Amino acid sequence: MEHGKEKLNHQRFIIYESMHSVISMNKTEVGDSVLNEFLEGYCSLSFENRRKLLLTLAKEYDLNRAQVRELIKQYLGLQPPGDELTVAASFVVSGSEAQSGGVADEGFLSTFYRIERNLRHSLKPVYETLFERLNTHPEGLKFLTIIRADILSILTEGNIASLRALDSYLKEKLTTWLSPAALELHQITWDDPASLLEKIVFYEAVHPISNLIDLKRRLGVGRRCFGYFHSAIPLFRISGEPLIFIEVALLKNIAETIQEVLWDNPPIAESEATCALFYSISSTQVFATLSPIPGFMQWLLSKLASQSKLAKAEDISRSPADRSGLTFYEDILEPEEERALIDSSGDLASGKSGMEIMLNLLTPTTHEWTNSDKLLSALKPPLMRLCARYLLQEKKRGKALDSVANFHLQNGAMVQRINWMADQSEKGLNQSAGIMVNYVYRPENIEEYAQLYFSKGHIHSSYDVKRYIQVL
Image (cartoon, rainbow, N blue to C red; front, side, top):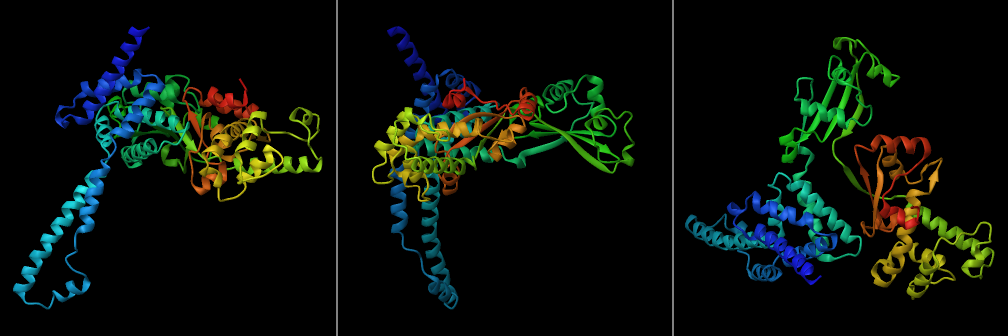
């Protein structure tokens, strides 16, 4: 047992050392072997050990604040060379005086420029080097998205300031590296490599390609297929795999059925076409969103208000077990959630029941509850559980009540994860108590999930979301 523990600690030590080497080594010394060692080592870690490594990275490889403070102190101690009146007066002095004054001003300004340059450099965290060097690796960008996914998972457990700062910095980097400006649009034709055409057949998620004749028809006369390639991702540049591809039909009239598009043989001459019909767009990757839940708080506050009003009207003073016999009354809180709210509310909210306390806490737009660790702890279990219920069970005409959820579900996504306090802006707190949701699109499931949602209103979700409402 002890030997196994020592081996695990040694493995973690090697991974930490490889991370430090990537950061500290000279740029010319960091080759693929060093980066591979860290990539493979990180991926072999358990989630808990990844958590420890990321916290170490966030805290020990942050910026040097003592240096920043010293530079700010130096900068504030400088006396500017002159105000606007001095500058204006310099235009009327003699040439020799202006020249000597200009030299003096340039001396002052060079000090400003030097400190400003040093300050900009010192405000960059040390872990920036790790991100930038990983980005040079063929698998680097994909790996960085894995790291960010782990960071977001950790932040759902609690708001760690240093890790939040690291996430914000990594997000900025990824936004730059994955800019849509780097997308390149290319037409895909029958003459393209077989490996690319195989991917088109495999990933077509809207209208499956039945055989090579079908594929050739979609790439032939009167048809177009375009792929979006991302030059910033070496993996896609080397393999020639598009991120997304779009299929288009050139038609004389707007089609009324998909059969006209897929089985119109022979197609009309392209010179006779009057419209271009986009009939399929497919992704070759697993795409995920971090989405708002705009209707959650409206639904929840309405539910709390109606049940609290009903409780007062019927003068409910029974135990939770006795209330179950009432026809319209629904206590949406679990007993332990109610006890926690009653014990934690203090002077911020009053009420005869947990639901009334919850309503009084969440209704004010000041959101004072977000400033109390005790209230955050008490509110998290019921809010996360009720949010999962809202997304998975609350429906209108058989479809998800939430408009954003309905959009993604009808397009074949699944509900992957709900994230606590993911949007702490005023809008985010008003809409969903700060909770956000990840929807995931998996190419192999998109068509099936969309069809089941459309026909039966079935919502696919991960175990992590289902467990909140015990729909297992």
